[in-house]
Image 1 (cartoon, rainbow, N blue to C red):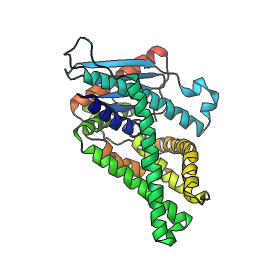
Image 2: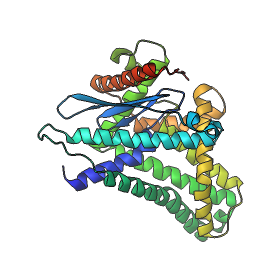
Image 3: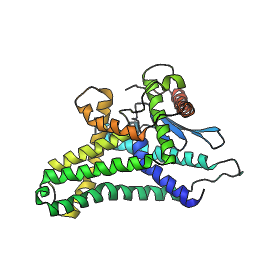
Image 4: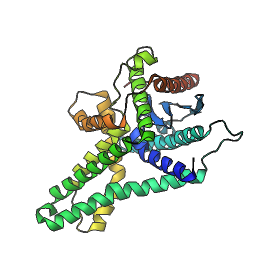
Length: 326
């Protein structure tokens, strides 16, 4: 596999990290990676990946909860930022492990490994891509429309159009990526991760047969989280006074982003515990969108997700951690 193809493949996967990851520091959750699944318990992490040879390899790691490291991480909104930051860090680690495993075809004594600089560049490019695609482009298009049709200059209509463009871009990119062979495999592992988490939460024996009986969409998922962020962004921009200039509007969106992320986390957390509540309806579009980001897994893929969960649970048990089911 050429270096450019590896770089492009990693770029697509890094873009999907917020979409694929799920979990909360007191709950069991996971994330799909290249030919595998990462599972997390409150104090442990395990990623299981199937190599090209069919061999399954794992990596385990004790994880300290952010709220145990810093007391202020227990505060609403702020805890969401800390938990998401840790989830993305672990997600990048799991992605790198899976990428290295996918490159190890057994033909060399020293397998090819992804260099650290490539992962750093991926993070920088992904952040730039996010700001460009989901902040700059919608704002520019909404501005062009308001210049042609003055009625859209009003705060409510302008920010509604800006938000709708953002959602269309988001869903459109997900759909296009889902049509690629590589990403479809990842979405199948995403479905496997959700099925296994549902199986665990149901309190029934976790095995392939039981896991396959559950649906692939889960309320505590990065896809739903991203959708909630977009909906709350639209509402915040409508309510908060809009600056007059383009640069000021762009700056406002960047400054408010941490607050919106933290607030979205609280909403997803609430919805996961009270699935019949009115606020939980805000997560419904994310559940619908998971029809794109999750696919029905094979039994082999479900087995990989179960192996990752068992590894995380075993490590959690060795540390004496308490598991809480949503």
